[in-house]
Image 1: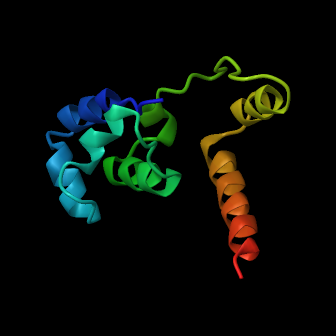
Image 2: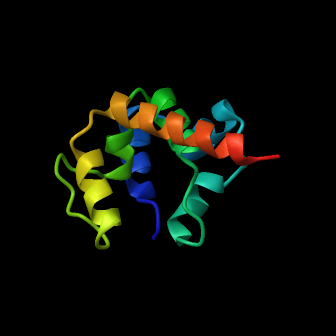
Length: 108
């Protein structure tokens, strides 16, 4: 699934900046953000959060999330997405950080 880079472009336009300037400010490689549109690889949440923080907007503004996004998938996936949709941006960030911590504990 491609990342909605047009949302980042819109915010950049509002802030009178460019994708290239955001990439330089964050130390992200030249053209990386634009390549998120290809759908070959979804950007890591820490990069999305860094872009959102830099542009001073909530992550949901960049991802295009609505207050109640429709569930994708079925079973556990849909249930999890419904729960996540009820959380604030800050709460979702905490869930993400917790999951990252769990995954790091797995590494030998």
